[in-house]
Image (cartoon, rainbow, N blue to C red; front, side):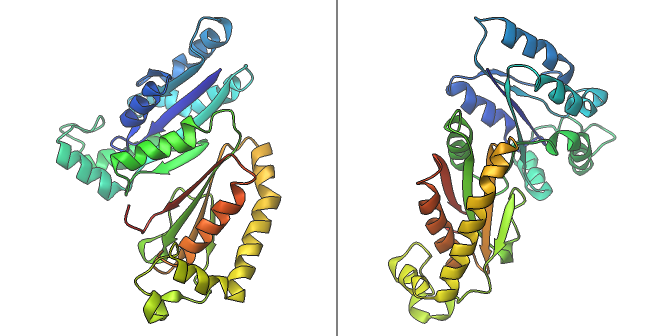
Amino acid sequence: MKLLIISGRSGSGKSTVLHILEDRGYYCIDNLPASLLPSLADRLTSDSSAATKVAVSIDARNIYADLQNVPRIIEQLKQKDLSIDIIFLDANSHTLLRRFSESRRKHPLSNDKVGLREAIDKETELLEAISLMASLNIDTSAMSLHELRDAIKCRIVEQSDVGLALLFQSFGYKNGIPVDADIVYDVRCLPNPYWEAPLRALTGRDEKVIDYLDSQPEVQYMFSDIKEYLQKWLPRFEENNRSYITVAIGCTGGQHRSVYLCEKLGQFFREQIKNVQIRHRELPR
């Protein structure tokens, strides 16, 4: 039996994720009261005719005391014959403000005394206990609907029963570190193809850039060090019941060095791990 708990701030994409999972064969429940989780788990484990894949959304519309009690409830559920993952979706506050303004939806915590920005900030506090327990955090700030669908398909749906889901994500420090990264490597110390005029407009996926970085000893040392660290410690994360790991690699602009290393590491680990994804935050999609 597999139980996915979907949570996150309003406007981050929870309803979209539920629809995607429903299309993929999950029995989905929106806004389940957290206090009913034990009853749902009992039904799933005792009734042979019950759905084998269930996804429930738990958000700030719950009673405050129930939200604070979620960690204790989850620990109790882990004693049952259930595979449980918590997926927490979020976006930066500016993006959430824009999404609500564009859709003209009403935030569930806003009213005539609580404005939209205050409601968004309050929701962060209410869901903190759940976010700290999440198996996977997904920042949807820069994601289109299509990209969110791909992320759910690759990292959750296809991950089922195949062990660890590993994502290599390149990024540019000029746009900030990805908030959903588990492990971050800074590769700005490496030779930069940007300063080679013929390579400036290319990316780490182009042959000329690959050839240039392949020829740099420092780059190969960095690749070897990251590879060896992950080979040693990823099994330990998995033994500690981690289903999802995001490895973020950053250079200045997120175009050359970080892209090259993500591609090379992704290709290497695909020979060892079934679910390996590569994403380049700064490149056109």
